[in-house]
Amino acid sequence: MRPLCFVLIPFGRKTIPSGRTVDFDAVYSALIRPAIEAAGMEALREDGEAVGGTIHKAAHERLILCDFAVADLTLASPNVFYELGLRHGRRPATTVMLFGDTGALPFDVAPLHTLRYELVAGGVPADPAAAAAALTRLLDEARHGRDAPRCDSRVFQLLEDHVAPDIARLKTDVFRDQVCYALEARNTLAAARCAGKDAVQAAALALGDLADAEAGVVIDLLLSYRAVGDWQGMVALVADMARPLAHSTLVREQYGFALNRLGRRDEAEAIFLELIARCGPSSETNSLLGRVYKDRWEAETEAGNAMAACGWLGKAIDAYLQGFEADWRDAFPGINAVKLMELASPPDPRRVELLPVVTYAVKRRIARGAPDYWDFATLVELAVLARDEAAAQAATGKALAAVRENWEPESTARNLALIRTVRVAGGEALAWADDIEQALRTRATATT
Image (cartoon, rainbow, N blue to C red; front, side, top):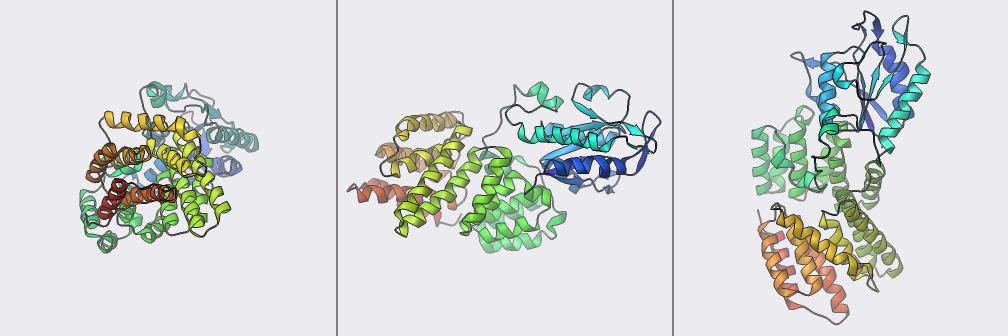
């Protein structure tokens, strides 16, 4: 899937501050669109529609959600600068600016790198091929320069030392608490999640045409399907979303998650690998990829295919480990890597060094006062691996109290079952660990 590149540019022929007339349609078709396509991206141009004199919802969603953007500042239009400000406030190092006049840039953007192109009679680019090549290079730099990208946002230039990025998985888990959208839709979906799958499906129908719904409502519906285990509903919803929203990292991750739950593992794997190639490793994406490989390992193990199982186990460990190394604060991929290392035959010696690092990571997050289910579930698994009954029981009580969606304790119970199976095969049985596993399974089948 090619990255989407949103284009902020006026339509038609306009007179710019210097008095010249510019054919912006020609600038787009001869310079900008070819450059975007040469960079391996897909151009999405603002469609020019407005409601009440303002940019409509779909344009705002494209502006915020598209992976990259190109902004032509030649007209010095208030609308373009407003949109550029929104973009800079949300996505640094992903927007390339153009300027087609010989005058000075407005003060606030003058210090930022801007590609200038010359205009000739008729208000068209003098050398569109050369300008397009230069634009392609800048887009390539934005796309592939993750190690040292050029920050194009004045906001992030001023505040980058004070802005701490969120742990990747928390962007999904706390979505409903942070986003602002219609209160009625929020309450409807919250009630539906408590009532079960049929109620969520009915709520989805009541929302009407999702093409006209706020992005927050659509994402909440996606997560509501996830909460009740309606994986097919998630897949169908993604197919009906606006393309920029469906292309966003959060949605792609949840789409791959649902595909894996449906047993469509090849498709899920391809999505996660594409995200990692496009955005780099992350604790969330790599954890989801690791789950795909872990499920393949379990399937091959159950089928008695020892050699194939060994290969998938190694890929799962590598995926989880890469995710943990991408963000040491997130213990979730770390505990999965440690656990699978313990289950390998023979056990992976790296687990000895990794275990205390994972333990420290989860305890520091809990100490900061914002723990969630996965933090306590991680402590449960760490204690079971360490054969610490008291710590395991204490963490289990906290995990059960923090459950948000029934699939969460079910997932932890499955992990404990893997540990139990390996230990039983070695002649070891821990009755208290079995009790914890059963308590989690009971919670997973309870109505919320």
